[in-house]
Image (spheres, rainbow, N blue to C red):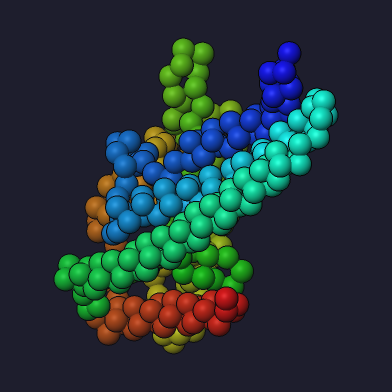
Length: 304
């Protein structure tokens, strides 16, 4: 039967088909949306719509870049199978397979170029929207505002998650995410007991989060003392979002919280006395360090 000569070579396409299915499922598993551990609502930042479009654009780039070689090779693999089962060699048919492969290669090259251009436009739009958003934030958080927040402040060999400057002192906020286990009934075990040197989670203990928070607090206290030529009150805070914190036997030098209502907690927690002049000096020092590190990163980034 002549039709078997065209049907049997499809067997050679099964591995390519399996790879294509895996690629599609991996693409569908990607979800960059982040939800709050407090109320499960999606967290939205300035430019969130562009962030979502950028995530979809990167997913499209992944799909085109991964499926492209598979689809391009399909005519060649099928043609090799045809050569094995065909009774006569038809060079026109083999040439058609080659032409089809070339056309598919050109199509996917154009798709990759389109994806690259789309991502570049979206990144530019996101950068512009973030820049405008930062300027708008100065309406409610001007430079002279008594409460100023810094993110990702670099220390010597690590990065401090957040630094909050208030009229009463400076807070170092370190955040740690831990998965809440389930008990035999399927309920979450979300209570953590805090001791001076370790955290007692349901089923395990950790010392590193407390040690790293103390390290960051001590580093910032010493650095600010050098920059401002005086001692600055610095309080370390460890945030464990989504957990119920038992601090009855907790440390005196650190504050361990779940992170819910953290802003209210910082307002009610004075760490010491700071004059307005010292408060502004601390802000200028932190701004200077953040700008300096950004400049160094820009210089270390290789040009494309």
